[in-house]
Length: 160
Image 1 (cartoon, rainbow, N blue to C red):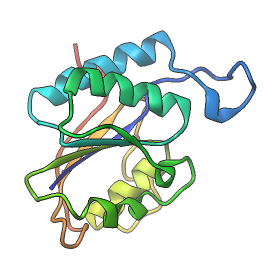
Image 2 (image 1 turned 60 degrees about the vertical axis):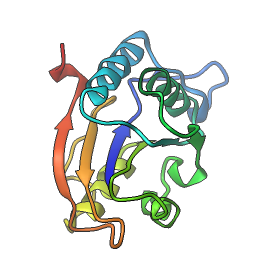
Image 3 (image 1 turned 45 degrees about the vertical axis):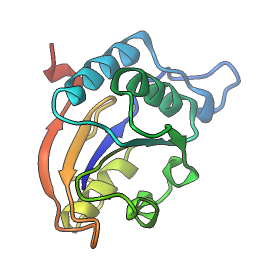
């Protein structure tokens, strides 16, 4: 199975209501996510997109959904909230086949920690610096969800 782990696009530093959950994407964040979505489209047919319930990840997932048109409806998961253990999503996605591609939109440092788990790296989320909008694609057997192989790691600033 291919899993794309993506950090949400660049977000405002504060929200109108003052909560972290409500922060919106900046104009740059939206543009970066569009670039990344077009990059994803060149190599993958996305089966499903899951995202955190926070506004900036909803916005990111909406842009990805519009560009990538996943086979199944995009879904919000509490497992992907900031500070949660993203590996809790593994039993849920085990039902997909090894030929499917799942896109997970989350937060830093959770995305880094989850990437290390899928790759079998023992670390504390410092092996990959997920700048806003960046993503890591991993090929991982759904039977064990570790010892995965990196397909690519891309930051939107690397794309035209």
